[in-house]
Image (cartoon, rainbow, N blue to C red):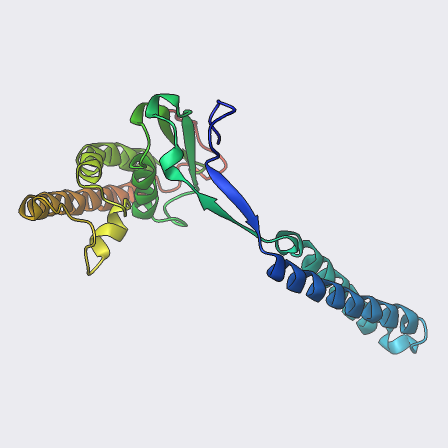
Length: 238
């Protein structure tokens, strides 16, 4: 995004890596020539083979064409490699930032553990962005009751987690990743004792949060079993 004023400085600068571009393009050209010779060889000798081996030859030719097509599609993102230099200090004030929506999709607790999905949800809610301009949505394709219950539990835990992240400038804002680290690099240098006390309180709340979600998940396995399927369930918007 860029500032509305035409005289404002850009938020990022895009640079092209010429050496990498030359190497990638040279490799792509040589590889394309090799593939062209291979296709010519397969096509030319396809009709000169005895009948008993024409089917294996055709299958091999088809697989090579498919792999060549997949390889060709992959050349797009390395044809002109770039890197960017960003300037976060040039961001406009909070009142000038646009509103953003974050959509998180899940399919069900059997394929995606509920705790993991809720950690993603909490990470999105704790983004360093004006709260009144940040909207987070979770879509559960399976419509499971445990997902809705876990969202309510996440909302309750977020009232502890979000202020803690903002007060102490926590960079790792996924609770599971933050509390799983052996070393802690985020701390309040002015008052480390107060930081450790608050951290232990939040960690206790997170353990209780996970336990409530776990118990609710075990109960819902028996309550919702056989009632709905992932493609046949009533909608629920909250």
